[in-house]
Image (cartoon, rainbow, N blue to C red; front, side):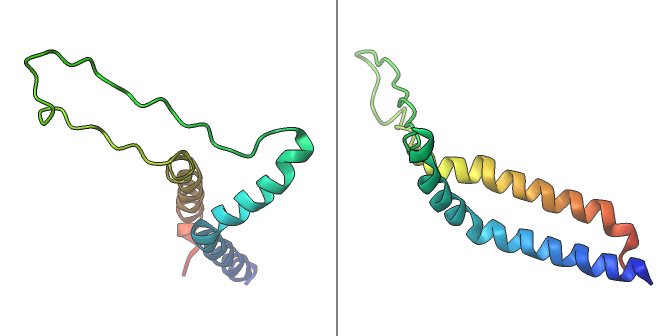
Length: 101
């Protein structure tokens, strides 16, 4: 009987993580921007240097198109924030799948 109660709590936790995956980044960014000045940190993401390849006189520009880089904030969201949340959701589901009814 207690396992049923625990599983409903776990399912609610997974649902809250899935909701946090959608809206949590903007909330976390807002709170980080408010907290950063008190720690003497600029609340910006540094931009990476754009990679440029040396071109020779006989190369055409259409052979090697420029690679479009996504903004640093969006790259952080997709490569770190969403990745960590997805790993957490997957771990919770895997850990407690044997107890689900």
